[in-house]
Image (cartoon, rainbow, N blue to C red; front, side, top):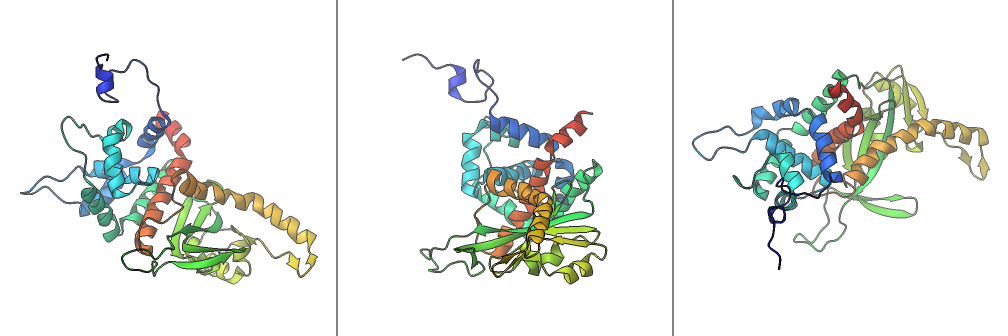
Amino acid sequence: MRQMTFAALGGGNGFELHRKTTRREAFLAEMDAVVPWAALCAEIEPYYPKAGAGRPPIPLERMLRIHFLQHWFNLSDPAAEEALYDSPAMRAFAGIDLGRERAPDETTILNFRHLIEAHGLAQRLFAATNAHLAARGIRVATGTIVDATIIHAPSSTKNAAGARDPEMHQTKKGNQWYFGMKGHFGVDSAEKIFHSVAATAANVHDSVVLPRLLHGRETRVWGDQAYRGQRAVILARAPHAADFTNKRYRHGRRIDEAGREKNRTKSRVRARVEHPIGTIKRIFGFDKVRYRGLFKNECRLVVACALANLFTCRRRLLRFAAA
């Protein structure tokens, strides 16, 4: 058996002669450059434990980086701890040197998540992220697309409680039944970034949450047929908004071809909402809830929307940083 080299003793130690930058490393390098770490840490710092007589707390930015890794790679608290030991790229992103220190354990990671939830910091991180984008010219304008998506929850009762999550509900879409929660979003029609987020049980109709998805300065509002007939609601929240939601074009067996063509024209704009939602569900893997109850999952959803905004605008942010 040949003697092992230093490169074989541990990945990412700088001794490798033959390697390439992986997609994970490239992704983390981009996000490291575009996340406004100082601004986000400033939102959390007043609530973060201070150094005292006991063991000094782990640096705040490191815990925030680990928290974001959980979102980007859809990791539970135990899986996040294991990933830090398993992945040199994640350790480098979090600033952990195993030659000098251990990675934070799953309880420390869980406690940081609970701190975010307990002090309502998810919404503050979301607002700080959008303020960072606005300062770089990526602003929420006067066009809003509203939409909702179902996020699945376990329907099995084979658990300690012998019951499904009481805050999740089932709903029927088409001929298929789903169980879980529903994410509701207000997305800027030009920049394709989230400006409003809400979470409800899956059986809550999309139109019920409509007022929470508008910022009030809209001149146009797009949405699918779930939001039809809500003109009065739109005007009450955004007095200058025109209703561009899709209308019904089937009347019994008769099809209104003019109405269908109008819907198609509107959908060319409305379809843009699928891009940021797809980032959350397909790239970040948030197509299933991770926790019991709506509150914890809504906190996760809000932070995921903030990170999705940064991901959507990352190339423009990188160009801004390089200028």
